[in-house]
Length: 234
Image 1 (spheres, rainbow, N blue to C red):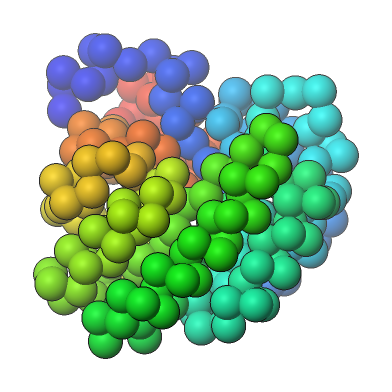
Image 2 (cartoon, one colour; image 1 turned 120 degrees about the vertical axis):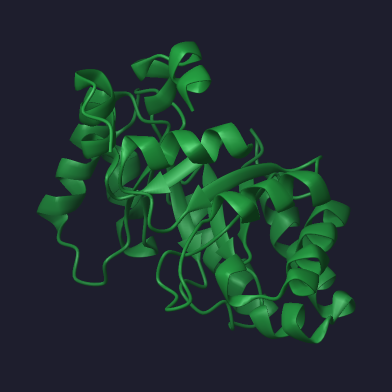
């Protein structure tokens, strides 16, 4: 842990963070503040529900902060057609990234045909954009067995998605773990990794990066950066 602390700056850490607000009760004022914080801290992305993608894109126009829209959150059980429509709407509203929950039933049942077809359909939407939109696929790793995680990761890599994301952060089974990040890195080395769910301290964020994650999804981004800058690591 000390090694990665020495190698990363506060700006580099901030650039790994997807600053997240996915509460159903989120207000316009909170979304505005989210975007202000993202610009001030230099976060990579703000991640918001579809309701707020257009507003976030308007507020962040001309800045280096990207907007990520979520698809099929939190259950992942929507049909392929619905997920495609959600992805298109988010992109046309200004999202440069899509965080989509995979069909968990397909993962649990090992239904590679259904899962591949769905991932390819949403990826097609993302790839047709100019520039291409990044697709992150959420596998809800804490709710899966080891074999199910491996199946999900191999399928996602086979399809060619950009990121595998550990968790929605909303499932009762839990969020990201260092062990799952390492497993994803080993199983799907061609995909990048977004660790999300329960990452609330700078120490925890650094642990995820050290394990192989390239992005951190968190609603505690400002707290994490302040901890890192002041040395108040937890």
